[in-house]
Image (cartoon, rainbow, N blue to C red):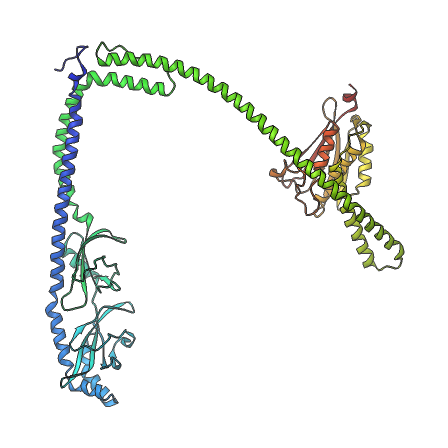
Length: 599
């Protein structure tokens, strides 16, 4: 039994390291063993792949040689010699009868053709349009196979033999055959070679590369014409180990693939067997480590928890006494550190809080000052521009207005069309004059001449000067208890004129109702609402409608509401807007009552 007396040096408690050390040894040994198993599996798979590829490449040599010999003998036949020397209906008929047996196997043979010495087709016989197949090039002196061709979804290949008379090659006989492919044959070969292997054949260039089931594939990137071995990733199939060999006696190559995952599946067997040993060793290490760590782990866990609590801002965690050994001294030092950290943190938090408040106040002051300076500068520039433009436009507009008045007076027999266009001119001139007035009002706002003003008189004057269109009804709701206001009557009328005109314009197409309502607004204020039933104002535009030059209308320059708010402010009041899209808009003018001003 391990000693439990306090004061024993921590160096006596090293058995705690046994489990970790044993685990490291096990991991290293297991990793080394796995790498060796993997290496041996890959070496064995490579040897097997290359042996299988060589066997497949040479297994059909005898059959290819017999086919070449048979076709070579056919090329010496007099019937073909006569066809090449003289292509007539008689020689064609004779060639058809002679070559017919070469197309009897319709499952494989798709046709034959005869060419002269220059490669020109003289005769074609077959079950498919083989005349559309690509030519084989120059006429060779001996029989040979041609590369695979993808013809209308079929994989075909040519076998050619020279047509000879005497010692001279005068033409060439070509037999086209189909490569027989099937899922059954592919599965049988896969079962034979094992490891979920796959077999591909095709041209070295990779233009035709197909497995025995007829599925197109991608040739492994081996450039050596003698073939070789490579590991690569096949699209859709994952990592593969591949061997390629040329098929002897042909221009073709054969490829055999083993999935890397199938080759390395033996690692699982190794891991299962080795796992029993690993478990026994780990159990031994854990038991030894637990016994050895009892006097160390518990104090360290408490210190770790205290450290995490302090990191989270909790300084109330208590740390017990652990004697005079290294752990005890560490606990005492930790308590001292926690107390100092707590005191330091409290001081820092106080300083940060004070500095943050000061910084926020300073930033708010800077932002407000900046916004005020920018607004004043923009308004000053806009005022100068508005004053100059307004003065320059007022005189031409007056001349045009006088001209229209003169034309109406002298054209006593004018046609209705002429009178209509004169009316249009008057309307547009009046609109332009309003824009000029808005510019001049914005540029040279006068100090208000405030005195007692009855609300009903101003509203009546407003409705008289701004008549409602035919499709709009105007209602007034003036409470009898509304006191008089102390304001500049010209300013108040100008504000109401702008609000009423805007309401009419908003409902010009749809029609509706405009209501002018005046009620007391608490002690000392009068509230005047101009309410329309138009389309309303979008939420994002409510704060913008009072900005100079902002407008959503096709006409106007967006100064009317800006001037109106400035006039309301100069008279000690406010002007605000309330709206919901599709539910109309309400503009509220609040002015000081006479009682509040006199008080």
